[in-house]
Length: 147
Image (cartoon, rainbow, N blue to C red; front, side):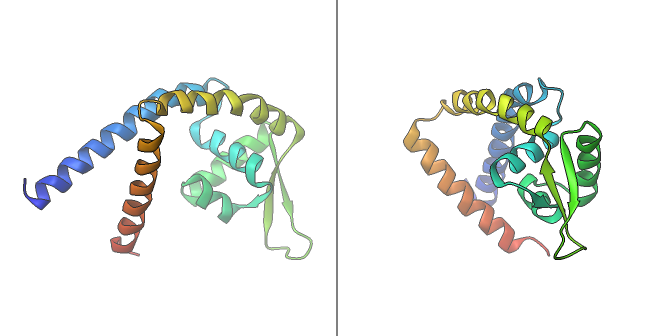
């Protein structure tokens, strides 16, 4: 197999595996009436505490425009608040409300357990190896992608 054919084959397999894993996990996310990005925002705030818009964008891996829409919708549902920082009025922190905290704390343990079941297709050592290889691949891809 040529290097190009090998790379293309790997790319297709990575895409198929990613789609299959996400398709298996998505019902666990959307069962609570949340989109995957909304769930990601609530989960990030649960584990990291209040974050700025920019910090959330990096954690949730979405565009700034999409994140603004997601935050608007979560705020309208009373799940998050936006608060201006007193020391820097330009920075707005997004935080969970008590209702948002209750929702994500109630949903996250089952979601995490479900992900664990999905990932059980690999042995623990294989999971560690894959995590290392995916990180290496991601860093290499960032290095060659146009800025």
